[in-house]
Image 1 (cartoon, rainbow, N blue to C red):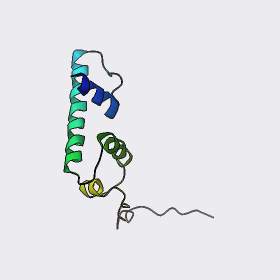
Image 2: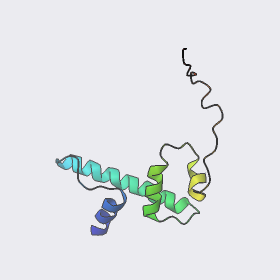
Image 3: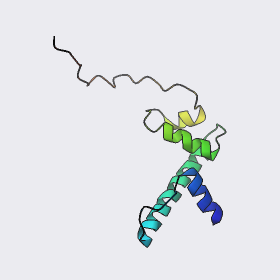
Length: 97
């Protein structure tokens, strides 16, 4: 049980609990356990040799980059693909003279 809380604190940065009620603490622990389970599943499905701490750290960095997750997990040093048509609906910025 101590190893579980150590892994939660180190990998998921659960330093303090947000709420003080029993329900708030249980909710935060369950959320952290689900997140740990998902990251561990990704680690096991990947063909790249991820350590759990490196995977968690790099997943945090890649949250706002649009790419296929499984492709990135297996080849993390590949550049993200160019997205055709992403900026087609964006208004052009024009300056008045």
